[in-house]
Length: 214
Image (tube, rainbow, N blue to C red; front, top):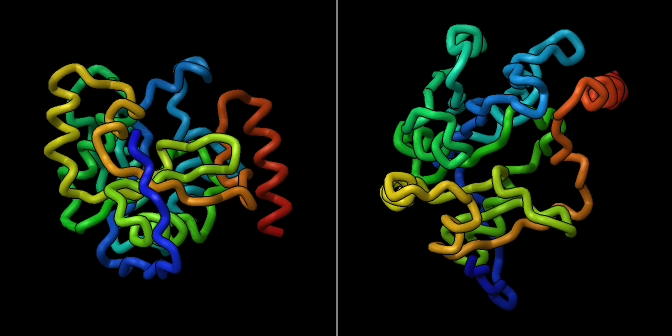
């Protein structure tokens, strides 16, 4: 991975919302939750992905959902649903490639379906990191570790990504290593990256959301 160096005194202009397509990744197996389709797990009376969509949609020009199962149920949310570019549940990069191929905007931002507390300024922070560092991809970082599926990327990287997948590449950090990366600072909001991997996680998040939305 080649992190971009910040430019001294550089300003961080925001990218226009209409230049960004949002992509919610819901194409996994849900293996850590016994194979359930995590995006459809009820959370305070709504599918988990609906919480993510509610927060992400106002930040982008268009919203897509990447899903390989229950596509009709996802489509009922009112957004286009696209499967992985390659079959076989090959991980988030396959979903990202599919979204990049479908999008018509210069940039694509991604978020997983199981992180319903994503920040309402997620895209603005990623865009600031990407533009001020002249990077290809901006990745969220909570001060302790990066969160690689929370990213903003140039859509024209799709050819490189599909080539990477076609030659057997699966690891997201290895794909990142081919490009110029910037990290967006989310040290003040680590809760934005909490995800659901168990019934206990779900119950804890229901309590948090009830408090936030009350």
